[in-house]
Amino acid sequence: MGSVVSDIIEREVPYYKERVKKKEAGLIDSVESSKHGLGYDSGVEQLEVLYFFILDLMNDFGLKTEKLIDNFSSSPGSGHFAELGQRATIMQNQATKVLGDINTVLRSVLNIIYDLKEFRVRLQSYDDLKGSNKDAAILSLKQIWMDKVDIQKGNSSIKAMALGQGGFVTLIDAFLASKDEKDAQRLDLNDRVKRILIPRINEFNIWLTQSEQELRKRYEIEKSYLKSQVNSLKLYSRWAKPYLKAAYDLESRDSGREPALVKTFNTILLNLVLIGKNELKVKDSAMEGLLPKDFAKDNFVKKLRKYYSCIVVEFTFRGIPQRVAQQAHYAFGGKADVTFKAYALNEDEINKLNKELDKSDIDDVLKLIEGATDDSLKQMQDEINFFLEEKDKKEEKKASQDESNPFLALFGFYDKKGKEEAPKKKEDAPDKPLRKDDWIEKTHLRPLAEEIAKTTAMSLFDIYKKSHGMASYT
Image 1 (tube, rainbow, N blue to C red):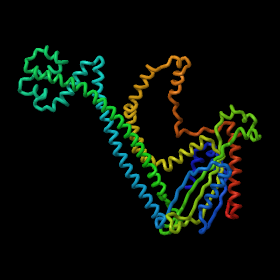
Image 2: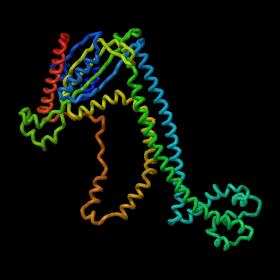
Image 3: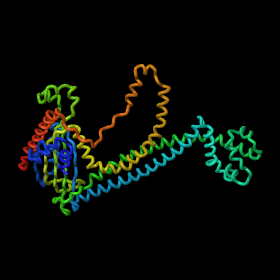
Image 4: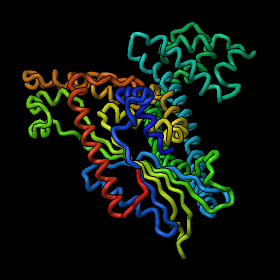
């Protein structure tokens, strides 16, 4: 596991891919710019001392240090394995509970969206009453009123009477053709039909006014509820991720055929990888004479990619976990193999390294929760945005029409606003191959960053070795 970082660099970075070929051809000894290793074996002293001494030493050298890999494997028969398994189970149960809440809220979001669609169809008829489709809208609303409201009267409803045997065959047509009570009086109908028709028209007109108000009010309430449910869904997602990540971190990695892990032994293997980065100061290096003088110009520096002297420290621990008396944690003594590797990487290569590590590590676990929330929301995002941003668009349109300031327009205020809201360019694809070094990078920047990385790696290795009087080193 400790060689994962080195494998990614040698596979993805063009400069080190070429060094792999040179090593295979026997032209160079190692792919890394430099490599130093040491061994430390003590069943009494804790391994944490070794780790934190090197970590603090890297920080003292001005390196920006990050942990890239932190894996462990415990033998199944050890107490350490059992206790961490119990903790992992607790985290899994908590994550399962939150995931259940996420599914409940997600179903609620779906139901709200369907309700809002129905409301919008209904409201479209009310909007058409104020436009050119007034006749069609009023007929549509009358049909809705007969099917939803009047039908509740049972045998005395318009449809039941018109379709029955009571002689009210013309009642539906008369209701649809009449706009108000006066219009109904002018129709060629007998008084018996008119006595039923006129009250129904009056009821419909009252319902028409009140139902629009209530429907629009409920439409706005449903939109507010949709917003709260979407926010709840995102909140639950945030709550679930730490539990899933903790459960993943507490899982013991498959050790395969690792001979150091015997099932009934009390043994643990730890794999840690640190990377320390130090940015190459091009301008300062040029002023010191390490680079040509032209490199000190600000306009020249801005065009260059950032280069870093990188120290990769790989730890492989084989320890014996021992419970600290009356406490819930373990101390580890055992053997440690530490390797210091020096690399010179630019910012694009470091970003690529981080992306590749994310693919092979915790990203796989977080995709579980993202699939339950982010991906599900993405499928409905257009519809959610349509309803949630509907009011904002109307207000922006109204503001642009009514509140525009001619004096601000003289100074180009609205032109600047339009430029700021221009769509951003799409980012480069994450799987895009890395660009090779140009002449300046190949002949000046990378060699200098590489030389600084070599010196730093050797200094870290030498200081630790001498401070502990160690003889087991390479």
